Length: 134
Image 1: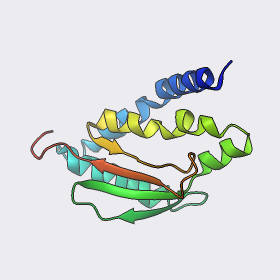
Image 2: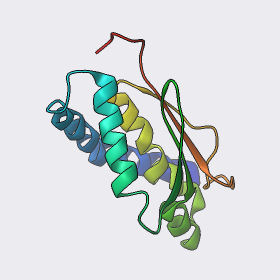
Image 3: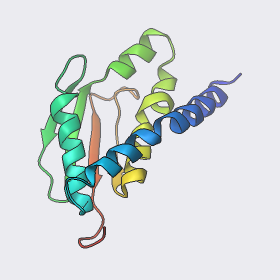
Image 4: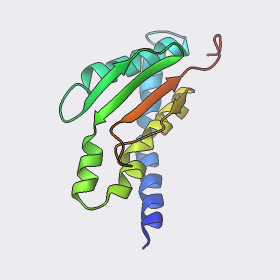
């Protein structure tokens, strides 16, 4: 099987398995607010305060006028797949799931670089829809 075929199968499986997680998070966040921006900020705030500061992740929070921004500077997923000799599976198995999350929440995620691709960090730029859209 080619690497591209393997990556496609892994991403398809991971998407099917993972999609209910951000969907449930977003439904739960309705208890916090009816506004999408408040809900997404709350979810991402919990993720960045509770999970990303804990080893083996390392991250830095950035200011953003249009959403939420942070960089991951150490990624255990990239480390794992690199150690297995399969760095090309990092994004389909883990990295692309962030786009599933963005889709479920109705926000835009822009990521221009990743550790898996050899960059120093993964940049996460979450942008909210136009004000007033829920």
